[in-house]
Image 1 (cartoon, rainbow, N blue to C red):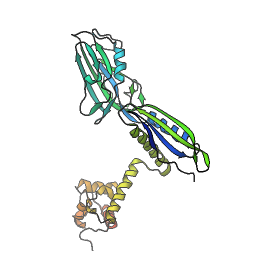
Image 2 (image 1 turned 180 degrees about the horizontal axis):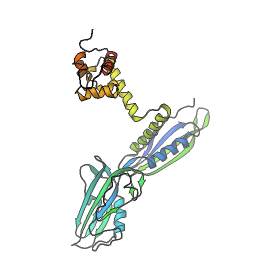
Image 3 (image 1 turned 120 degrees about the vertical axis):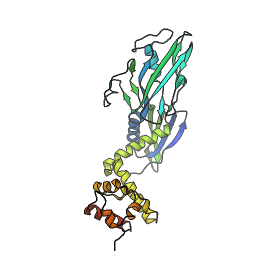
Image 4 (image 1 turned 180 degrees about the vertical axis):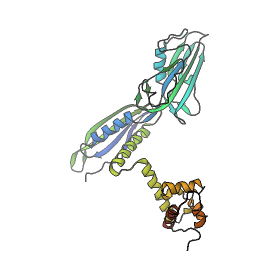
Length: 320
């Protein structure tokens, strides 16, 4: 068996940038792991991006507006650089209203509590006339990677585009840049082991550490499915079953265990839930006769419940 590396460590940290180092990698594994992490980081992390912009007085991206120094295309390019973090929901609409000569920045957008703008200092436009008003509405959505504006509506319910709404390409990825380097290091008598240095720069919506471990988690989940056939749903189910067993072994209150955790067939589970029986304690409150009289409860379902209850060291009322 090949030797395993040392745990990763952060050797350099700036604002949204960090360098991670993994030492003691078997020869060749530096490139293997570095390349896998880089590809996942650049393509697979969820972020938020602007997908639609409405500017009052501009019906399309080639419009010009009196009293505004920048043309619509330049304003759109500036707006696309705004980086948001959505705490609740899949999309949010945010508005900006500015009047009078001066610079307009991201800070002029009025964000709801569910959204955070991480670069409010970003320049949006310059108003050159005191009487000019600038009104902008943007739609921010969650997504993965980079999606062209023509592809944004695919898979969504068909709806007529709003008048004046301009679709824009969405850069969802929260990663700005990823680089890695490999160098030789000594492990025992050998000098050809790998030292991996991975540099990650984010847009500020997540930390480099969060990005690094999220990428690792994505790879681990893929390998779990390949190696053990474990899907996230199956893994969650196994964890629930383990909790039930642990509670029973340690003398915990097994009566509070949800009926979903008993690994019943769908028909039996539905019969219990439809009759308001949601926990093991709810089952034990009923006698075998009253349980069998529940709507949808047949002899097979009753026998199945009795077997599951017996495995927990319990029994129904009325049993000998």
